[in-house]
Amino acid sequence: MRIAPIGIAMLGDERRSVMERLEGECLKRMKRLAEILDTKLQYYWGSKPEIVLAPKVVSSVRDSKEVGEYLARNNVKILILQYYIWDYPYLVWPLVNVLGRDKPILNVSNNEGEYPGNVGLLATDGALRQAGLRTHRVIGDIEDPKIQEEIIDWVMAAEAAVSLRGQVYGIFGGHSMGMETGYFHMIPVQRVFGVTGYQIDQLLLAKYMEKVPSEEVEKGFKWLSDMLGDRIKYDGKMLTPEKLKMQLKLYLAMKIISEEYGFDFCGIKGQREFTEHVVITDVAEMLMNDPYDWNGPKEPFICSTEADSFGAITMQILKYVSGGLPVLFADVRLYVPEKDIWIFANSGNHASWYAARSFDPRENLKKVTLWPAIEMYFPVGGASVEFDAAPGEMTFARLGIYGDKMYMVIVRGDSIDLPEDEKKKLRDQTNPTWPHMYVKLKASFEEFINVFPANHIHGIAGNHVNKLVKFCEIVGIEPIVVGEDKQRIRKPLWKIVG
Image (tube, rainbow, N blue to C red; front, top):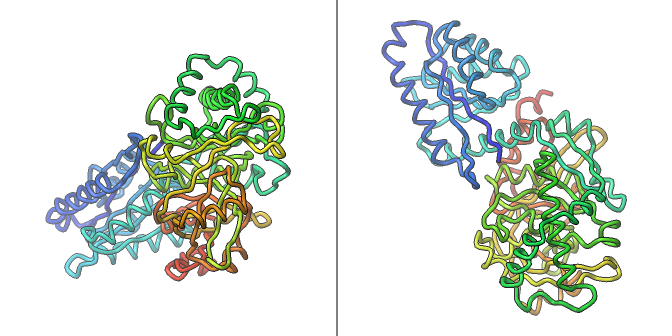
C-alpha cells in the first residue's frame, strides 16, 4: 500500500520571552503525538506512514516559511497542526501556502486552563476556514483513548484520500451487462479522487493466459487441491481440472498485466464474453482479493466483478481505511422480513478470507467448496466459489452519483451465524453454489432501500463509519449514514453555512 508522509507542526508565540520558557514543552508535545501515531496507526503488509516532525515551533514569519519548506521537501501530504499555547494565527499562512493548500489539515489541541491551546486552535483554524479550507478539529487530552481514536480515524481517512490521488484503475472489458451504476464516470472521479481509469479489452487477458508459465499453474492447482480435497466438485463437464487450471491462468494473467500497466486496482467484466467463451472469473477474483495465494501472504489487490467501477473505487477506499484488510463484494440479493436480515451473495468476488477471517489460508479454505458453474448462466464452465461468511462486525458502503454529485451510503451491520438447516433453506432460495453473508443491518429495510445506489454492496470487517465520514468530508462528497449511527454524525461547518 502506498502511504503518504504525515507532517506535525506547531504554532507559537511571537514573543521571545514566552518561547524561551515554553518551546521545549511544545516540542515535547509534538514528539508525544508522533509516538501515538506511530503506535496506533495499524497497517498491514509492511506499510507504515512516515511521520515528519517540524524542527522548530513556528514563532515568526521566517520560521513559518522554513517549516513549510521542510515539510514540502519531506513530501508531506497530510498536515496536523498541534496547539499547546497561545499562538499568533497569521503565522499559519506562510506554512500552509508553501506546503500546499490541497493538503488535508487536522487541528489538535489540549484543553487546559493554564495554557490555552484551544484558544489558539479556534483563532487559527477560524482563519483557515474563513479562506474556505475544509479542516477538522480534535480538542482534548491526547492521552485519552477516545481522543487518540478520533485522531487515528481522521489520519486513516486522510491517508485514503491522498493515497488515491494518482492511482490507476484497470478496467478489463468495461462494465458488464449494461449495469450503468458500474460505469466509470471519468470527470467526477478525476475531480473528486484524482483516479484514472484505463480500459483494456479482455482479449489481452486471454492472450496472456496462453503465456502463463505452466509450472506456476501446476503449483497453484496443487495448492488448491491440497487445501480443498474432495470439496472441489468435479463433474466431468462444467468443472474439470483443466477448467480450474484455466481459472488459475486468468488470475496469473490479471496479476501480470496489472503489474506491467501499473494498475493500483482493477475490475473484470466477465459476463458475457469470458463466461461464455473462455472461463468464469470467480476463482481469479477471489484470489486477487485474498491476502494469500500458493506463494504465501500477499497484499489484497482490489478486483471488482463485472468491472463495477464505483464498486472497485469503494473497495479501494475501504481497503485503505481498514489498514489493508480484504474487502467484500456482493449483490444485495435478498431481504428476509421474518428475520429482518439480508443475504449478500454474488457469483465470485467474496474473498475467502471472510470464511473464517483468518490470515491462515487453511482456516478459511477448509470452509470453501468449489462447485460446477451453472450452465444456464455460464455455459463455458469453471468453478464457482461457495462458503458462508464468518460472523462479526461489518461496515458496508457504496459510492453513488446523483446528477453530477457524488455521495457515499454508509451503514454498519453484523455478519451473523444461523443454524445450518436455516442457512440451507436460504441458500436454496438464492444460489447454493455461491458465497453468502447473512447480515443484520443496524438500519431498517425502508431506510436502507430508500437511499442505496446500486445492486452491489461492499464491506469491511470492523467499525469504520467515522473514518468513512471523515474521508467523504475531506474529498468533498456527501456521506449518507443510515441507521443508528446517523445520530452520531455532526455536519461540518461548510455544510451548515454552505
